[in-house]
Length: 49
Image (cartoon, rainbow, N blue to C red; front, top):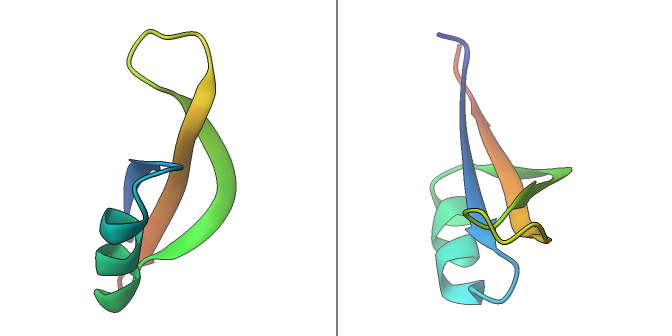
């Protein structure tokens, strides 16, 4: 596995900050918020060596 992906709701700034502290970076991708049909989740990735 070379990368770990996660998503964070765009209004959840505390979670986004925590992921960034752990080394995750925003990909610019967006995702559906659990069946809502709206793209409110931001995608983050942690690249592994």
